[in-house]
Image 1 (cartoon, rainbow over the protein chains, first blue to last red):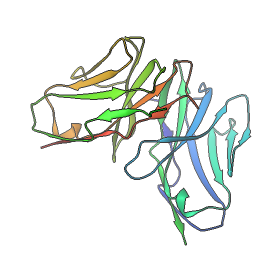
Image 2: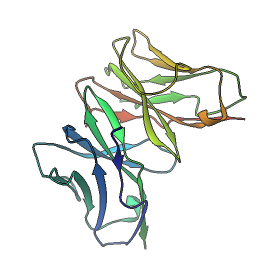
Image 3: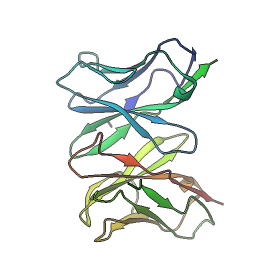
Image 4: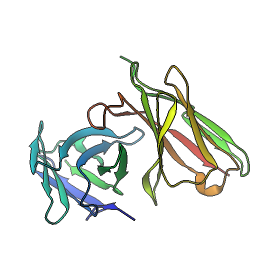
Length: 111
Length: 114
């Protein structure tokens, strides 16, 4: 079946550095992608989204890049802070509002 | 504005029992979706309700069911519990117009089946 996967299960980054979290998706028909952040003991929190007719979208300290040619999605976090430590999920939507999540990447910020 | 509220937060049940979980969406939101989160399978979509009707369904057995009430509150039921049903069950609410900024997750119900 269709799947959304992550290249790295864990990522450690020095505080203040930039981090990049990658995601591969397999359904070329997906038209909407979301990045979520999940902190320990909490539900996923929306970070940023992007539609398939775009290749880049920027938010506050975060940028999402979409490469439809290789079905790749990435989340860039600038100037990482301790509060950025969490598990990050990419998710894709195809069909009618059904989210398919990746397995997640644990980001650890080293002080 | 109150967020998505899930009750109970923690639950321990025995194999073979049944369990009901509750989700109160954000006021004004009409769509409620349920997800199962486990270390091995990640976040998996169970079903979505909109205006008391099941609008989407994931690939879970019939032991998993849900419903939505006229006030948009939703319940999820799992019958004949199995050890593999141990998971964090998350509920998300949205206005029903699509995912994204409108979708908010609750803190989840941690179900342990022994």
